[in-house]
Length: 440
Ligand code: MN
Image (cartoon, rainbow, N blue to C red; front, side):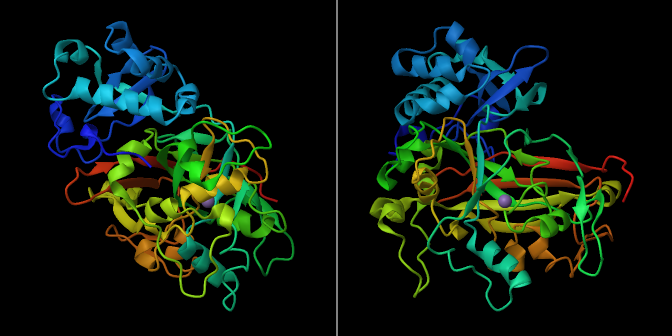
């Protein structure tokens, strides 16, 4: 696992004034992403307070040497796949150098200042060309809640505690935060209807997840040992796996999610590195008594000891009614990645265990992360108990599922005594009305 070094020091400050005390991007974070400014091309940058450090400009100013320079050359590109594929050592070299460049006592401050842009002047894009996207189902409380809705006596299927469940998702419709989401049209059938109809989904939902970017890949046919899995994890983001519950309910048997989920998935644009999260690693939540132990290929002492993350996840919704009355967004849930039944390393190892080749820039979703209570529900399906108990907003509006004009906003932060809090930025998307269609 990652080592703590001078880049994590709580007293470390940046000469970028907005970084000090910034809820997401103090100098201890340094997430990487792809941005553009005006008509200029997309390129790699690092978030620092309300600014973006332009890696390409810094290269032109000769601010890097050695391994950090090699890392910066790939990180300056228009997509981060090559950089993510370099792995841990290159990531650490870049992090250490950028930390020193941005520090309050930086000896290169004038040259570094010339490499900073105001974030508000820039647009953020997808960090990588996502070749493949796989969505897991490791949020056990979500699996329980959803299972209870459909199978009250037998909520968890018998495989759940033995195998990290997942399915292959759609990469082409993964969108950067801020992109509006079109409500999907689709085929649905209510239980009492005789035949299905085609039209706008009436049960549009979000799913609160984290995304994991794959770093170095594995060759086809060669599994990844659980003890090596951390080396294949390049970073983390927030992921909203938008879901049309009515389409899902009709189409999902026997092969699982299809059009109910492939119309859009939104990710936050900043890739938070395993190094930035190192102080916030915790032991995997112990399994309940009587639960099976993971099979040996999924079990590693070190992974059990510090393979989980204490990451607080928050969902809020901004509606037209709230906005009209000048009210703040309504917080729908507060959850935490400690509710993951499997670690990210177990997801990686299981994915490759049959020989599937993972590639740099592939994205893995955790699955919806809910806590045990409704206040920690990672989807409206859970929060409204299957679309039965409406959520009341301060505007007087009610919600069972998302309405047109609603904007869903995810945020996340890690906190620990003795360390500086860092966050993920936001993952947001606003719902647009369905395209007009003839119902039938
Ligand atoms: Mn999902």
